[in-house]
Length: 378
Image (cartoon, one colour):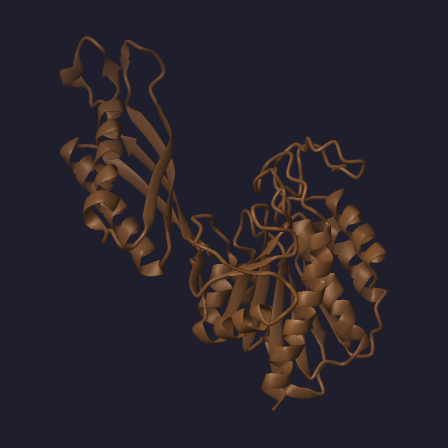
């Protein structure tokens, strides 16, 4: 595909963002683009709103994987672009339109020239909301196309356009949702002895949770607990009988994430016991494991891009979450950043990446995947 075609694809995809597991139009658009390519080496199958494409290699005993996410966000676009979202209240604010376009560009190269080993391209739904990667893996969707290594990119507005950012170890944090409901006995404000105040209970829980990172976690190992939502009571002269608290855990390794989850649960149970109330505790991690890059594949990727014409930048780990972490917990591989040089952050309603990054991503990763394929075919 030439640059003009890739830019058209990007603009077409940008206009039709859909929420996870509802990417019906996106799936059909992707299938149409894929079917325009030479089909001699390609096999296609769908899984719900996702797509898997297998490019048969000259040596079919090895398979490499490349994954892209395809869903959008519930964000009202305010970029003012002539090709802005046509779907009210939805936007590709996280750059998955860039991801998809780069993946199609890479696939088109291997559709025209048979790869040295087989390649599985994963067009994965529901990265933002429903652990689509974990769902696909656990459902057995890969079948015989399961790769022995897997790679992915994520656009980064803070990096120069076309730059590759990566690091050994953790690139993205693992996340876990916190949903806790304390239930006691409501009552009149004048008779606290006849009630069980869940405002005070919830406040105690919030305060105690602040000690987890400061006193329970090795200070060398990063973790975050944020309780961003708390609801209790209906009016000022009624003692609240319920308190709902919601938040998130972020950690750079899975063991720290699990330890924080353990401490949150202990504190919730302890507070509930001390206030003689019930605690309904829902700690939901799903497939949002830390994105922990494999040492061997990442060493090779870093060396390749350091030696390439693209700019390579060593990046720090980020506390953002990405469900590619689950796939990396099952398959060795690497995720890296692709610079898109935008003044607006990911998830911003004005996020508008520099589309020159598309060509860099296609050139860089088609070259890298061919390099890895030749290594495996030796």
